[in-house]
Image (tube, rainbow, N blue to C red):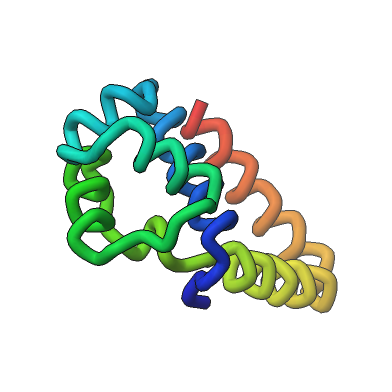
Length: 109
């Protein structure tokens, strides 16, 4: 789903920037915009221009869809579908699926 809410876009910018351990000043400098402009974008006070969006994405090493789309709805739908299928499975299939998931999650640690 494409985001049109400036505050949500700003929240995504904030989260991504924090994930990469960058300050607003560092991000603004890398994107060649003023720190005030970047701070206003994060607060959802400004509409983000396309050229500014592209420079910020380059500075954060991300694609525009990471800022402009909200994939949480899709992920929740997939999760619900999988859980529903798991509930309808035989006990043996359910146990196998849970063991596979558990093994996979342990491999991520």
